Amino acid sequence: VSPPPADAERPIGVFDSGVGGLTVLRALRDALPSEQFIYLGDTARLPYGTKSPQTVARYALQAADALVARAVKALVIACNTASSVALPAMRARFGDLPLIGVVEPGAQAAVEASRSGHIAVIGTEATVRGGAYQRAITQRRPQSQVQARACQLFVALAEEGWTSGPVVQAVAEQYLWPLFGAGAAASAGPGMAAGAGMAPGTADTAVPDTLVLACTHFPVLRAVIQQVVGARVSVVDAAATTALATRALLHERGLLREATVRSHGSPPPRYLATDAVSRFAAIGDRFLGSRIGAGEIELIDL
Ligand code: DGL
Image (cartoon, rainbow, N blue to C red):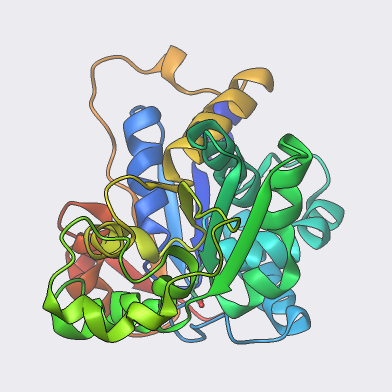
């Protein structure tokens, strides 16, 4: 029997309700090229964003248990909904295990990007309702004005692989024009006229200069979102800042693997899904930026 691996040799667990967290895995792999990752997508129970906080917390704890049972050395909650709702319960359950959610890093990315302090947050219903982003932003920058809006349909579009085209454009306009104004896009064409009455408010209502994609599914829709809000708005997400936060925490705990691994390249991640393995493989590459074979994904039950 071989001895258990030294702590730093163990994999990092990454969890999302579906494939959206692969946008975070991608940033993690870039920032931590020597680390081994196990990614779990709870595809059987997606979406989390429409469910009650109690249900999200129960699901998230079960998913976390499955990763902890696979001896992960740290856990990245690559789901804004689960991070907003379940992080305290996870900290209570897992004690010393390094836990990284995406809300604090996402809020950090937003305050770094914003000049005016007027920030818009879009996420799932549960994320927006819970208010964790709004709190994390105003904690970092008390004078900021935060507007949040649930854009739940973006999750379905992203999971469907619909990342551009007239349907995505129309949904994005419907959600975002009330925050940014119908004339926000630099390339306002004839189609914009229909929404002209939705331009936000009065002259003293400043339009946000920063939009946080507070859902790990949304970065694949970034091009359309950017086009609808206009080029002057900084569109940020939590992926890169989460990767940096993970790196910093592992360093602080002496758990970085890079010191022990040289020039072997990045080991391929392991993938776990609770349903629809072939669907995961078919759409996962859009989120990860590289191909995932169906044979690389293990079907598990929670
Ligand atoms: N990926 C999840 C998030 O970041 C949203 C998807 C869902 O509703 O399950 O909030």
